[in-house]
Length: 132
Image 1 (cartoon, rainbow, N blue to C red):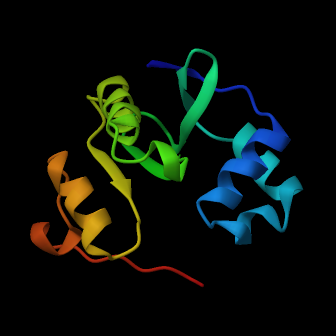
Image 2 (image 1 turned 90 degrees about the vertical axis):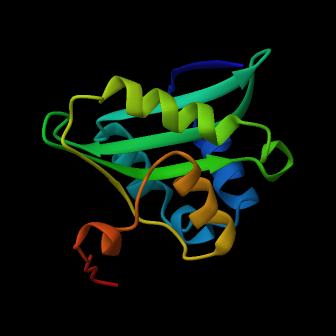
């Protein structure tokens, strides 16, 4: 598997977001494209040129980084793709005080992030708020 900077491809992005069920994003591809172009970093995981998954981060890159999106094709999940993408981001931004992400509260996702030594906000005396 190779992890490298991702060059935006609308058809590829639409297909990946659709396959993981994130169709709310694909309803406004122009906004998603703008989000990608204004991201701090976007990486893709590849196997022999085939895209396996993406990770997109936003923030200032010095004091805070937010993992905005991490997506892996369903057929490629549980094979280390998401782990490799997240570890690459964690390595690149190892000096950043706050690496954050927001995710679905399901046993599968909680287990995944805890396996990478990430902690829930409540474990460190914090909480989060969001406008929906």
